[in-house]
Length: 225
Ligand SMILES: NC(=O)c1ccc[n+]([C@@H]2O[C@H](COP(=O)([O-])OP(=O)(O)OC[C@H]3O[C@@H](n4cnc5c(N)ncnc54)[C@H](OP(=O)(O)O)[C@@H]3O)[C@@H](O)[C@H]2O)c1
Image (cartoon, rainbow, N blue to C red):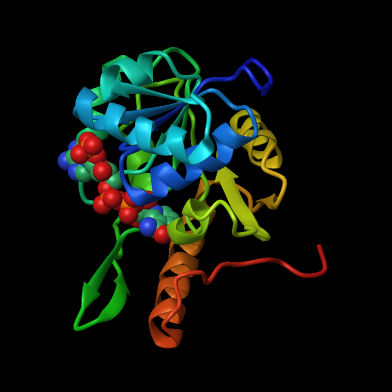
C-alpha cells in the first residue's frame, strides 16, 4: 500500500450530500485531490462548482460514481446507511486493487422526533459493509461522529477527534495520516472494526444532544490523550 501523500486521490461515493460536501471542502482546502461522486455526472458537476466557488479555487473534481471509484485510492462512503449495501454491491467491480473504503455511515432512524440506533446483526453498519467488499479492499470506519454542519462552515474550527477503526492496520494508518492533514482534526485509533458499533452509538448520542439543546455541532474530543 502506497503511503499517504498530498497526491493521494480521494473520492466521495455519494458526495453530493451534506456530509460528503463538508469533508470534501476540508480536504481540498489543505491540498488533497478530491472528487465528488454521484449517480448523476451533472449533479456531481453542480456540487463541485458550488464547492469550488466557496473555496475560491478549482480544487474539487466531479465524476459519476463508477468513474470516481476507478480513479480514487481512497473512497469515502457518504450514502445513507439504508442505501449503502446495495450501492456497494452495484459498484464492487469498480474498485482498483488496494483501494481503501472509508465508511462514514451511521444506522439511525427518527421515531417521534427521537433518534434511534438500528441494531444490525453484524454489530455495525461498517461490519455489514466490509463483508460485501471484494477481497483485498480494506474498510476503515471514520468520520462517523463529525457533524456535517460544522464541516460545511469553513469559518468554524472543527477542534475535535476523528475516531478511526479497521481490521487492516496499514489502511488505518493511511487514513489517520489523511486526517492529520486537516489542522484542527485529530485522528484517534480505537482498534479493530468491532469498535465501529460504539462509534455509531456515539454518533446517535451526538444527534440526540443536538436535538435536545437545539444545536447542530455536538462532537467529541478525548481529554488526557
Ligand atoms: N449529516 C451528518 O452530520 C453526518 C455525520 C456523520 C456521518 N453521517 C453519515 O454520512 C452519510 C451521508 O449523510 P448525508 O446527510 O450527507 O446523506 P444524504 O444527503 O441523505 O445522501 C448523500 C448522497 O447519497 C446519495 N444516495 C442516496 N441514495 C442513494 C442510492 N440508493 N445509491 C447511491 N447513492 C445514493 C445521493 O447522491 P446522488 O443522488 O448525487 O447520487 C445523496 O446526495 C450517512 O450515512 C450519514 O449517516 C452524516
